[in-house]
Length: 235
Ligand SMILES: [Fe+2]
Image (cartoon, rainbow, N blue to C red):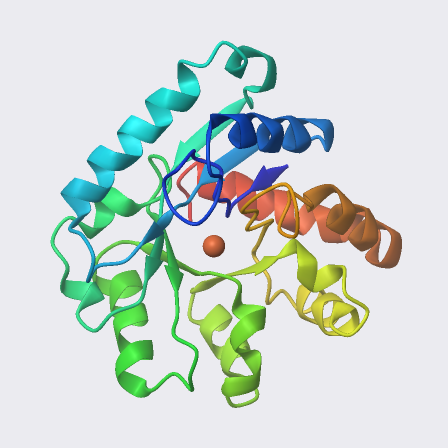
């Protein structure tokens, strides 16, 4: 299974603080059977340009890879990416494709905490229709309360992918909503959005178990199908 959204790189953002914590997080992912991991540190366009971000990311990655413990916890596939904070003009940003996940065309975008206006939605759709990119909206469950009913369905129908955090399936207050969205095909990817080994630790295994128990294996197959399409570049 793929964890599409993580903050595992050491000392890159507000996620893992150092290589020790990174190794613990990778070991936890491995123990849960997560074999593919996208590393998606925050990218804030008002703080740095893509080039500087990519240089910093390469340094953090090297620090992780050069650690003697890495061989023991290395996932089968690791994809370097970013969680790109939405900003006005994102669809016109030069080199935006360099922030995509691995060698895919998928761009993980963190939308703002407000009702998304036509301009914002227009930019996301522009990325998809005219930039040959696959926008994936990060942890959409956080924004549901701000949006009009039916918006997520419309976005999914328009080809925008939606990612939710594993915790959406784990809290009793949100679990039924999560199951409903997954059954309706409005969830394309799952991520742990793990930041550490305390309050925000890797938790994909628990979510996958819950989904499998409530909805059966077919629901998981939908997620693995999406994963395959993403990694093979067919979506
Ligand atoms: Fe995140």
